Length: 194
View 1 (cartoon, helix red, strand yellow):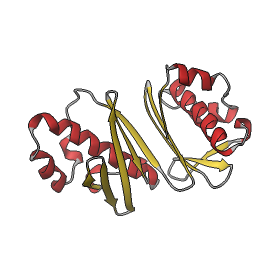
View 2 (spheres, one colour):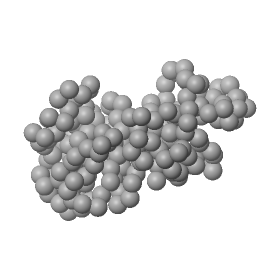
View 3 (cartoon, helix red, strand yellow):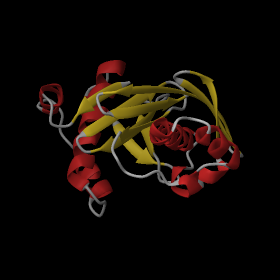
View 4 (cartoon, one colour):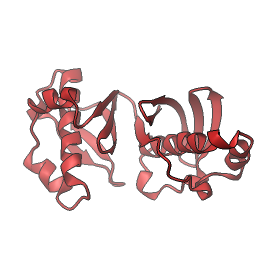
């Protein structure tokens, strides 16, 4: 896992040694926020190269039939990338992984994205804690859907989260179950689903 701000010195140092490819440019040509997506791709390539010992120029990404980024070379690796500029969270693993990062802000929660049981649990909390808990559940649902490869078609109201501990949720859907770890730090919530 690597949590980094795109405008940080750490990111700049890595970006200095990592380039995007023509394939990357084509992949993001019509994407919203293409510039930040390219930066995240370069950081991901550099991190994967560091972890595997493979030269970044030899790393090849593709997309699954669902549109999720996959690692074509080197084989045997999974990745998930989340970003809300300038926030970036990259997860790389030899097993399927999903990540999400959400800024803790004053945006009102969208309560219809919860299951009925989740709504009841959150309503039991003190009013000032509810938005934060809603955001934790949302980030866990996003990470879960990414791990299982159905993020583009996911209905959050059909993904169930259950607290397992202070910073851990069990997340389930028709597609499977994830163990999700959460961290609240620096004005953001980070979720990792394994």
